[in-house]
Image 1 (cartoon, helix red, strand yellow):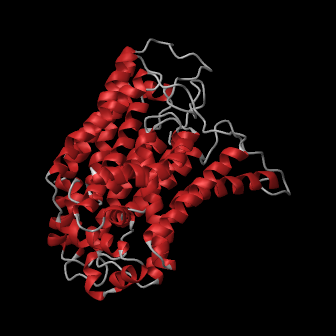
Image 2 (cartoon, helix red, strand yellow):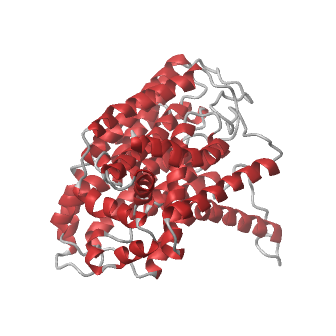
Image 3 (cartoon, one colour):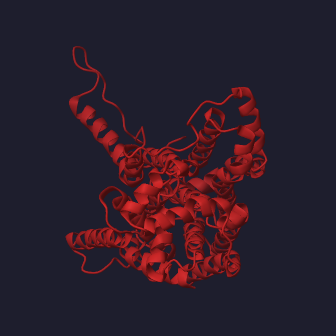
Length: 497
């Protein structure tokens, strides 16, 4: 209960302004606000390490600065109050109730709290360092004895735990692990509401099934993570945040709201763990290409003229501007995670994965890695089968709803898995022990993502079965949960075709 108080008041209240500016009257608002607060706490912990002071003081500075910026944006836009968006109907409320109820089922296990080995040696230990102030944090991270525990990991999870210690003291160490479990639930809540949002504008059966699927994906997320979701590990948090970024940024119709939600979730993933930063960069590059395609529909390059350049100066400027926009799409949400990565290198922190060279051959390491990862990716054949069936039978439905091409999601999944595979193969640790200790956690992202993809295909299939031919009128606006809706007659956002 005390961790829930910190989540709501310590993280949710400071994050409600930015979340309201992004989500408006959408159910995702309630899960996004604590994640924004946790991201601000992670930035504050970075300031504590770099500039000194305490987490509480740095967090106050960051939270005030962010909220002042949001208020200034509202005023500059001529809005004296937060944008309201459409009034809430019964379906958003039902979806919110189902998602919260689904999350309450696995969270009930917190009544018998436990702390896992890595939850203790990595995340809880760092939470105590952060709560001790600048000197204790810097000395603890630079201690060579602590190098085995990856001192360069980002500080979102430890910062959230340290914030709970700042409010209630260090007498109950389970406060920190409870905070992590609640943040896991918030990230899965963003995934669930994104799955439900795929049914916006659909008929009643589609919306009801989408709400049920939203709750189911939350339970599936905790089921995939197992004890790691409740014992203080950060793996489910970065995985769920990255999946949420994909659902909102690469699957749902293009809109300002979906883009900003995806950016926030990618930033949360990048501030949670090193794997989260790598995956977030992959997702952000794909989002930039989806929102700023390499080729624009209907755009024809002017013909070249003898004796003149192949492209006019105006076309060159336009191309440069669009590449600059793509760079901004990646750099802005990735900046906090990249800043942390630069800071830890500056003060000499390194992980233990590439500290030496392995005596095992690459072939041995690759074979072991393939077997180890495959054992935790049983969902892949099912997801591939559904993908093929969906592309053959439901492509028109997906395009009519302006959902992203499934190639976006699968590209993010496969590239992320390739990075993890390369890390195991070229890393320095003994491969069999390394896989035994971590592969069930490094594959959580792919498992949750593919289950979310299955849920979205279910929504699409039901929509195709129940929708009437020509029910969507050109130029009509589909009902939504907030601003940023996409016109039914708008050009498709797919550029992989």
